[in-house]
Length: 268
Image (cartoon, rainbow, N blue to C red):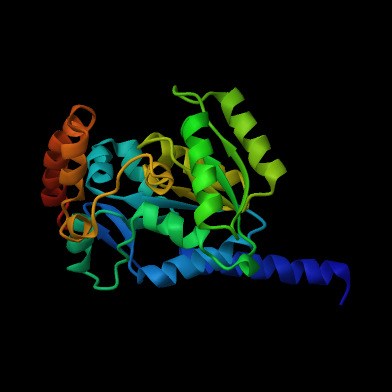
């Protein structure tokens, strides 16, 4: 077979891998279509896809009650309904979704971060870290080097704390492309990170994941809720108790809005 034939076969395999992971079963909870496959299967699919992508990437969103509360904005809700993978991050949301589909993945962004960082080097994952300050990124890089010595981090960038403009996007795109990253982690706050994840996945052959506070947890900058709090759906209360001034509005008003939207969207 000539080189053109081999290229065609490679492209077909790449499309097949991407199409397969994007075709996973989903179930709607509070209007958001969530992946309805077990978490280990989802992680394995992302791990295998990352090194094989050649065209558009795969946007991945971790959805919790606060995320859902912001989908009262029709544009933000449409983002979750227009492709990509939405994974139930929050325990209450996973409980609601599992009433319809018991295989719904319950996978927190920080846990997915750790799982993919711990991947066998033979998978060829090349990680890029987008978010945080220069100081927090340095702490994160040191923590990853210490805890995941076989992991390859090919680049990082601390974006400005303001809406990103075209010049910012251009700089980020050049850095990711030049680094040859195939896994891009975006931790720039909700909902900003979800829009950026979609944008990046359209332009780069990478798995692009919006992971919220995962950088701070993995670096040790922020104390993570104990396992019992996470399993009982009270992680939000633990975090609120530790940072009441910063998080009270998010959790008090966010949880009320979440419950309202769950009730209103119960049929879809």
